[in-house]
Amino acid sequence: MIDEQLAAQVEQAVRKAAEEEIVPRWRQLAEHEIARKTGPHDLVTVADRYAEVHLTSALTELLPGSLVVGEEGVHENPEEYRALSGPDPVWIIDPIDGTRQFVRGEEGYGCLVALARGGVLEASWTYAPALGLMAVARRGAGAWLNGERLRAGSPAPGQVLEVACSHPDYTTVAQKRALSRLWDDPLVAPRPCGAAGLEYLRIARGRLDAVAFSWESAWDHAAGLLLVAEAGGAHLTLDGGPFRLAGDNALPFTAARDEATARRILGLLAAG
View (tube, rainbow, N blue to C red):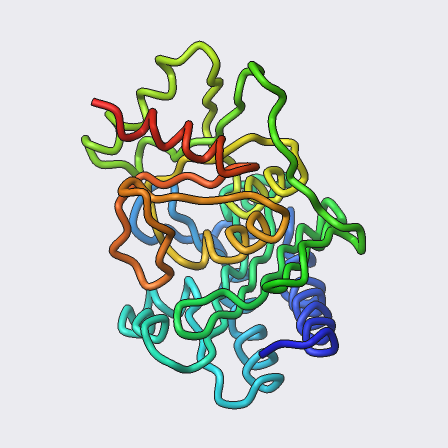
């Protein structure tokens, strides 16, 4: 569904949206340009909103007949999420992944775009403007970072596994209990996660062993899951099945550098 030419056009659209709507507002936000949505850690800025509008227009023009599931659009109209269950091509947009980091003026934020059809991920773009990183993945064509092929590799036998985990504010009691088991294994070193898209990129680069996440918003995970898969990694939900973009996943779920690591983390999450 997406060839190399279209992939390059989408990359340019993502870069342009960031250049015009996001980067000029980084470290320049006024207090009235920041708002809270559902909780103290769930922030939205004018940069998020303008970037999503920009990307929605550009991407649907590149692929006529496509739909959009964007974080800010779904916040205003939750029914839009249903597009992920339909047959049409869908752009999945997180205009600023890591809005908290963006608001604090940190470099660890990104812009995430993925394209799916019928629940299958076809391509993804992970852009971190402040870090100068653009990662692109296409189903069956590999994962690439700034033009270099990504290979997640496997952890060395017996090494301590670094795992980025969900913030406790976004977990149920049962999910907290499952995630807490990661702290019980001396060969696992859990830590709080940063921007989800950049954690997935770290896995694809072989710089992080796994993630364990307890929420399933497609805009946070779609781009990274394809990136990890095309770099040779794997993901599993708590019931052992794959992550479903449309939702109703068994949580928490994990993505990791290889299937063996994913199964090891899943075993800890599912124990007890």
